[in-house]
Image (cartoon, rainbow, N blue to C red; front, side, top):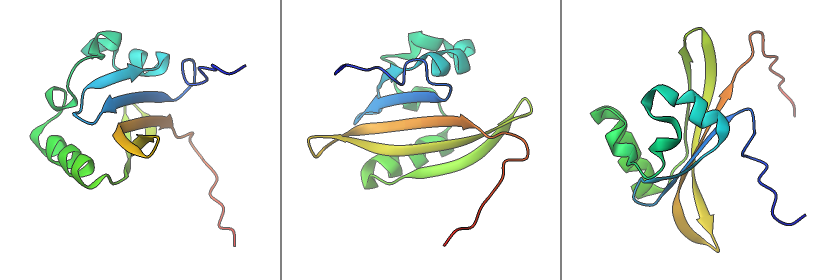
Amino acid sequence: MTNIDWVKEFQGSAVVCDKNGIIIYMNDTACKTFAKYGGSELVGASLFDCHTERSRQILRTMMDERKVNSYTIEKDGVKKLIYQAPWYQDGEYMGFVELGLEIPAGLPHYVRG
């Protein structure tokens, strides 16, 4: 098996954009998560059109500096970890990936070392 699309039905949300901020991929969970904004119809749209000015500034900084951005949110009683990171192909910067992962209530935390 050389062409596995493991992320398509992954339980976390995965959105991929190109280096100009155009959405080029959304997995099934992302399409459901963003259904009220268009779901799969968002592929081809600009991230800059989907966010507030504050968020657009953060996006610009992330894209210019190619930095990871992560934070947690709570919406409709569901907590999520949002992890945004640059992606590369053959060493060339290609854009950003955003993963949205639900954080279960009572998630254990371990300090190891």
